[in-house]
Image 1 (cartoon, rainbow, N blue to C red):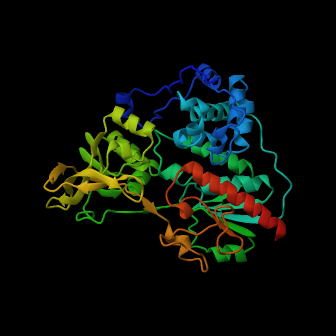
Image 2: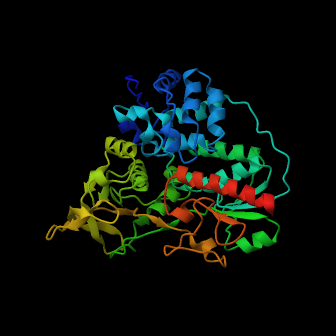
Image 3: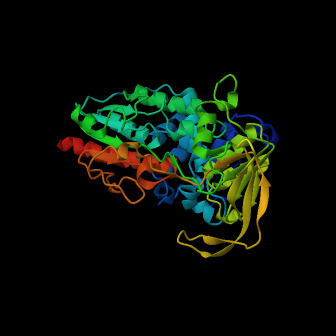
Length: 462
């Protein structure tokens, strides 16, 4: 029988106050909330929530331990399948994955699986004392290219098997999109660093400032003694709209805008030397999670009016409902059914406005969403001084263009077997956004985990 107890809301910072700081918005469950929420779980005999988890966490089992107050036991269960639970509990779209399969969600509210995951991971970080027991060395070496979610997960899984793992990261810190893309107020960087430190404790070697494709190549890694290679370089090539004015001062890709703020700490200027030019009016083009991150960051950097400019309706917004809700609470303004056709500059080459058209929705297109159609004569000017383009990203081409024999699709993504993540080169595997295109953290982790299992089997026969 489904539980009738209401789902526990996550305590958060006040909306007005948080719009002026970079501290974490969601404050986490207090202990009593976590236990009560865990007790809502009806412990299904055939838990579909596990099927909805890309890394197949035994969700009912860890939740049962939470309900019993055995938080460290819950953490062991969680971490046996999920390498980065404190991160996933904060940024994964549970509402479309595990929670969407919850029996309670059929006639009411699903169990807050993601919030419980975060609670358990944070508790273990604060109170856990167990150390990783290193297995006997296998004598095999694996190179991981990219220290994002896919690469870190693959590295951890292989370390558990006793393989010597070295991660090559192009930036000066590990973490990939977790460090440069997701803002501090959604994912504190100290949390990411703790998760990375746990991998180092497992024996994983992480080398930064290593641009594979420039300083070395996949073939050179194989020739130098690595028995297998995993490519997890992500989708770091921003797309633009190709409209007039995108070269004006004050136009950013979301990638650059968020990297400057998150990784280079522009929000702490001038203590940190990397600034961002943010005008009083800022337009963010796009409607995904990255667009929400950019808009909410612009607000915290001092913008007075921040607009999400999106050519479909609120119903079609691809961003997580929670992120849209938080953005609305903070005062982000949504210019829906609107699309820019030109960015206009002043005599000094700085952005001063956008020329936009209003749209209406027609029949569904190939994506299944209703196609936006421009309304004739609806042109208007939107005064803005900063424009952030957040309409998606393509695969990072550095590794793919310097690796002979690596099969790619028409978009430049690596072709990998979905069951093994094997590429067209024996011993070379790939996963995450470099294969699928821009997707979620947990899907990248799932690919890293699948690849690690395949690499382990490959090494047994090598």
